[in-house]
Amino acid sequence: MASLARSKKSNTVLYVLMGLLVLGLGGFGVQNFSSGARSIGKVGDRDISVNAYVSMLRQKMNEFGQQVGTQLTFQQAQALGIDRSARTEIVTEAALDNETARLGISVGDERVRAALLAIPAFRGLDGNFERETYAFSLKQNGLTEKEFEAQVRDEAARGLLQTGVVSGVGAPPAYANVIFAYLEEKRGFSWVSLDATSLTPPAMAPDEAQITAYYTAHPEAFTRPEAKSLTYIKLLPEMLVDQVTVPEEDIQAAYDARIAEYVQPERRLVERLVFGTEAEAAAAKARLDAGEVTFEALVAERKLTLTDIDLGDMAKPDLGAAGDAVFALAVPGVVGPLGSSLGPALFRMNGILAAQETSLAEVHDALRTDLALDVARKQIAESANDINDRLASGATLEQVADETAMETGTLDYYAGVEDPMAAYPEFGAAADKATADDYPEAIDLSDGGIAALRMDGTKPAEIKPLADVRDAVIADWTADDIQNRLTARAEAVKAALAAGTGADTPGLKIQQVEPEKRDATIAGAPAALMETLFRMAEGESRIIDEPGKVTLVTLAKILPADTLAPTDGSDAAKLRANINTQVSKSLAGDLFDLFATALQAEAGIQLDEAVISAVEAQMQ
Image (cartoon, rainbow, N blue to C red; front, side, top):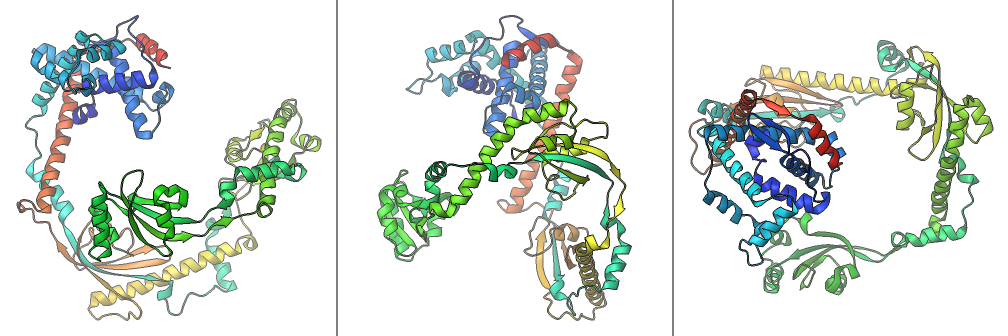
């Protein structure tokens, strides 16, 4: 319901024209949903028409589809909760309509006429309202002029009611001041980061005693969790590659199909800056040649970025009429004005990519493997039913492996175990759910393979032998040692700064930063720096830990925001005005939500679930 107050998505013109005209004519098909029941329910004395509900559904499906770049099916819309959102909004509209009728709020014919004349979809080729187009559009969507004009009138009345409820709602000055002060206050500070290169002597590898002591002191880091003992069988495409015969003509055909990948002509890295006229392009080129402006500045003048004009690597034919001039450049440079599909343009060549040719001999084995894998996947797919039948008839995994090309294996499985089979998401999911009472079932793997598993029991958690985790122990010990020494060094610097005696900081550069707001980004500093600063007292120092790095930050100055009225036109004045606007909108939206909810509770809501289900069934 908040969306009704904040964005007026219930606007009749938008949902009837965009929802019905665009969606109805552009993909869902025109269909009259009111052939049976005409209402899905009512709020108070106000009926909710079937067509209004369908329109709202279509509008919301179209809005979401445009956001994600695809047209939604009704099943997808249901999964996303769009149907529930549409019902909520249409019920809210009905509650408002019921209230406007009770209060006698309406608008005159002139207001309705002005709204109709403003709708572009009802205009003819001359740009004026055309009655034939108006009537045709409504007829195509199962609406009469009377029904549509009533909807326009209702929407206008709802707007008057909404305006009456939320008008005069503004941000309390004290509230806006608090937000303004939070955003505008600043901190001046100094900081320095220390990493392993800051240590003297440098980090050293642990000796045997230290390795053993660390391993003993941190058993949790080297403990294997409780595991499931699994037996499995597998048939993977790569297991069959050597058994597959691939004709040479197939390899040649695959090479020919990818010839554009293997044989690439000479190319250029090109940017294209388009102008409105050739005169404008020529003037820009003259300024560029005279050294009055850079190419980047010309791009900025066009309110574009280098990304906007980047064409990437282009072959000569790709550039059309500009190809000869661009490829005539032996070094990076700018040519033009030249013609392009978008108009006269300057072309900047930034680099030359030499022609490349990869022979069939160089990729023969790779192509053969790819083709063999495709054949192997087909063979596995054809054998899947036989594997399933054998397992279903009670054959053990070992029996299936003996009688087919499948291979057996075992695995102590737990979440995070490093094993090629556990790396398959489908295998891992089956292993997670496996119990000792389950019967093995075939598992389709993502690479086209097939597997099945059996849980034979469990193994309790146990500490892995030191020999198996020696490298991990050394790595963890070294990381902890570096972190501890860095922290100790930072603490020494911090203590010296607090005592005002200076600090022994050879090789360290303490950086001084002028007051910055809390949203500032400091290059090279930890992400938590500004958040930490705004929790500190003036003169305080803190240490921020990161893996392999510590940062010492000292807060030198707190600069409160000036909460007095800022100068008109200043950034601070614009920020304060924006805060007032946003807070006022939020408060108005919340107030209207409460009002709409109260109207629904007072009037009472009656929905016919059978009719709703029937309507939605027709949309599937």
